Image (cartoon, rainbow, N blue to C red):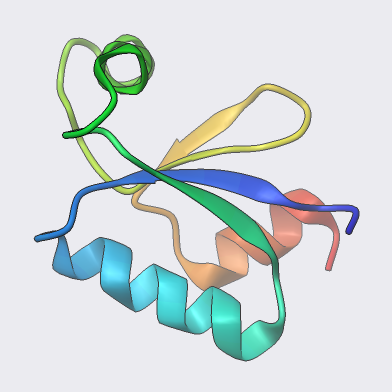
Amino acid sequence: MPGTVTMYSTTWCGYCRRLKSQLDREGITYEEINIEQDPESAAFVEKANGGNQTVPTVLFPDGSTLTNPSLAQVKQKIGV
């Protein structure tokens, strides 16, 4: 589906759970990567967030990222 995003998250992140449920409700597909289980992804998140492992970090098809975005921000970014 056009607009598919990648969400970097952790199992304990409440903001991640909230965004996932909102994306599910809206029918927006995403790939979820747990940064605690993938060191390369953790390094990517750190690079995107000035050295911090802040989640959710969302990677868009155009290569840009948003940290802890709202559903409205995600929808605007992917044109939904």
